[in-house]
Image (cartoon, rainbow, N blue to C red; front, side):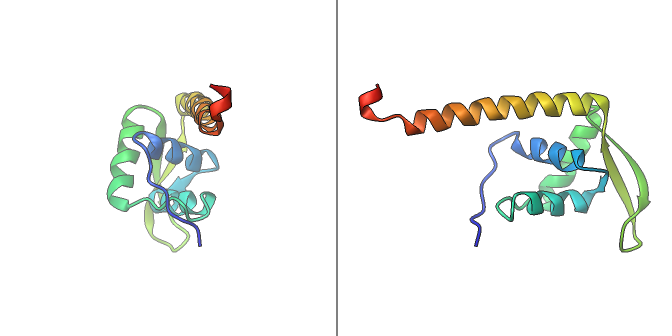
Length: 113
């Protein structure tokens, strides 16, 4: 069983950009995709997801249009904009640098200080 992880501030937006970068997806599908790609470690509450989608769209990182979901319901489908792709790349690189720095710091032994 995978332990759930708490997301640091700003990480939800990064995970949404990742989920949408994998292909157009409706709002609830974003939530399911994040759960799938994190192997269940990240569970996003709908109450946090939809305001974040709105913010990202308002910032010009996502665009949306109405369509029909796989269970034949009307749904808003999201897609990365060119700005969203660029911002996602920058955030991903920044996150990797931070994660590497933390990993190196945590692995440091007393003899290395």
